[in-house]
Length: 156
Image (tube, rainbow, N blue to C red; front, side):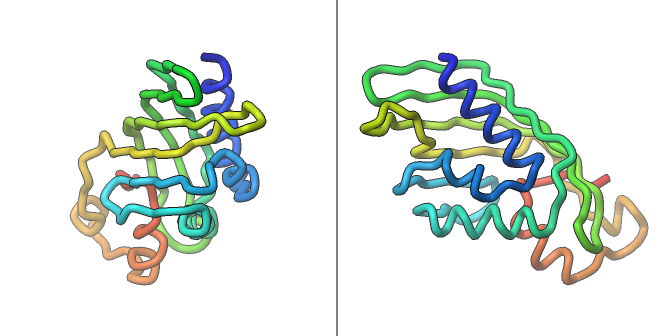
């Protein structure tokens, strides 16, 4: 499904550019996301706040989604795939590399455009304690605010 692949490409581009508006046009009004190790977020307002916080804390140098399967029937579609990303901190903090897998459900709107209706992702990484890995303590401000919105990460 070419339309679903285009949505994945638009998602990657919005992540790389920190483009909040570009990200939000991909989601249905009643969308729900279930980020790895985070609370479920219901509705565009909550989803917007999640990505805003992520973009304020991280510069996504690389984000790539690989759609492994996509199917549609009528006004519904789904895709399953993997993703990788690399970030750098916008203020203090650690560089991050991550990978994982996702499952998205899409709904076609009255205009025929597809929107992300439900999205769940999980990390393929083993989380490590930053003090153990680096022999130092990360900033508490960085941990409490920025790492609480990251996409589930391995620190590098």
